Image 1 (cartoon, rainbow, N blue to C red):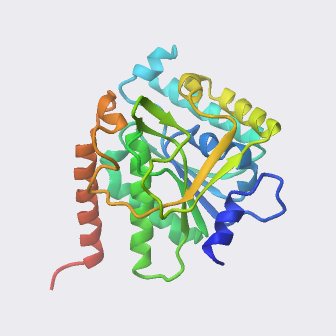
Image 2: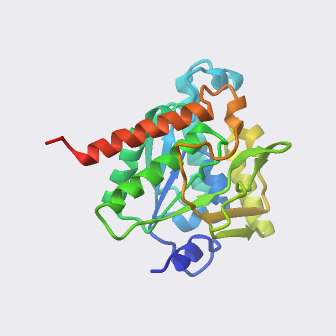
Length: 280
């Protein structure tokens, strides 16, 4: 199948008779799937949904801010919020995996993340992978982008049939602060589509957002009237996605763009050494 057909099937409306492609969905946190796919999530009931982190930062600032005495209680609440959204979207039985990395720490485990994604690709041979763009919005988002792109690149060595990587729009630093629901400019060679949502679709997306009570503040920044997707461009993870500072350079999340690029290079070197095998 041509990539244009896969892209059209991926971005079709929820009630479109076109069958959805065989999909692997790789997102950083519970709630990212509704940001990306809220209006069309019901099309992906046969997909494999992967959450890289547990949505609960270990410093407990988030959990305490939301009234949880124990981190484990906050982690459970985040899982319950996800179940609410999946039920409301009509995909309660979707195949789901937690990699259970701590929120805000996925960038510390890039090689491991790439290995996990590679295993999912080998086991399921999806036609598409939907994930985050590399845009400097959140280090966990950038980690997902690295893990997916690196896993697909390694699979390319042995296989001709590779999944199409499709990105959903999330957030990044803009001239006047955070910009949500749009891609970074500069990927002119990448196919992008803007899906305008009907009033009913917008209402559903708003209801899905409401399932994530602990994320109300951040979700309020995202548009309800459209969803954007593009075929992923090629990335150089040894460089920041744009001229620093990126958004998380100014956030207390324990990561900077410079450190992320160092970690990405180290993970790339490690994975390439594994492929090369022992020296003779």
